[in-house]
Amino acid sequence: MRRILFWAILTGMVFYIAVLYKSTSMVVLGYAGAVWMVLSCLFLIWRVRTVRCRVAFPIAIAECGKPLTVRIFLENRSVLPCLRFQCQMEQQNHFLHKKKKKWLQGSYAAHGENSYDYPFVAEDYGSYDVRLRRVRVYDLTGLLYFEKKVDSGGCVQALPQMQEMGVHLTEAVRNFFGDADVYDDYRPGDDHSELFQVRPFRKGDKIQSIHWKLSAKSQELLVKEDSLPKACPVVFLLDYCSGKQRGAQRVNAYLVIMSSISFSLMDAGCPHYAAWYSARNKDVIRVCVDGEESLYVFLSCYLEETFQEQPKDPEEAYKEKYQGEPYLCLLHLDETLRLYKNQRQVAAFDMEDWEEQLKGMDLVL
Image (cartoon, rainbow, N blue to C red; front, side, top):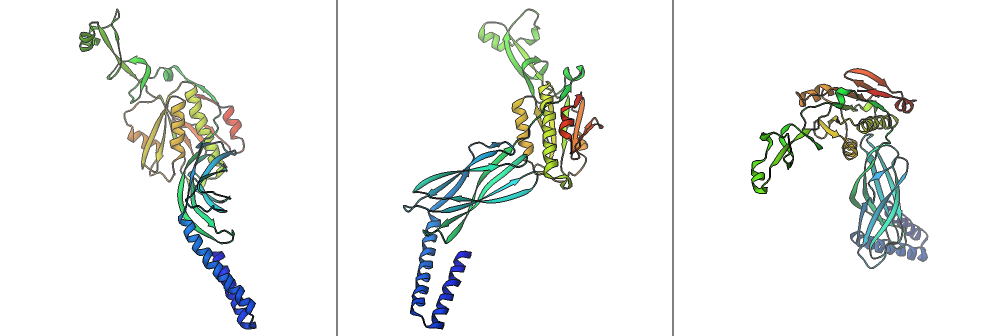
């Protein structure tokens, strides 16, 4: 619109000079400019209605500092080609609340759907909401344009790099048994509320465990095996909510330390609950991490959070919601990069050498 306004002012000045100096050629030039502007505006009104734009991500997982392909699709529903266009891409990091806008240049778009690849670089760890907000379509001369609002996008996650650290588990943690909603897929237990499997009768099995209905149908003795609750002896509480500590460097350090601790616990064979206060759910939520798949589920859920001040102490909130559920150890990582074990500080990471501290750390549980 600025260019159209500028062209209208310029045309008006041409007419003013033509009247002032009584120049026929200037009048003709002014009329030519006015007619061209009117025809261009009519063409752009039609062009905006025949253009649709959307964005897609072939891969939604990015590496911090490395380019990721963002694919923009422009659908031209007219016979005439679109010689030039621009798309405004907006990206926002949920943790940092930092928005960044960038105009992407596009060239020739024939009739039908056209695709264009652009690089997207995640400068920090976290979850990014990447969206197309506007598209500019130009006339045949490439001078005047109209803007059209677009709302197309998705989520791109830059997962933190996990470092392996030393984790030593005591016998109490290794042999921990307790009530849980998750059951072991490979070992039977003594929880009668969940059936693990039905197998043929073996010497030494109790008569009370025989499944009489299935035994009658199959004409052989079958035994029920109960499930083993997959209890978590460790609770890993995450407490990052203060806007004062939400600098890019500190956020990146927090996410790497957090993911490294969870990864090392999983790698050492220690199932654990990763818990935090969710601003979206207005409550404490948790994810059971006992393998690579559940680790990435936890990281994906946590990175999508938008944090705010918590209503009360996170440890009290967790114990209040999951009261009566036993555990042996509670790890607490706060926003100042201090790690506590059962309310006793075991590590304090400095911003200058936190990576070296993390590599040389040994955690005994």
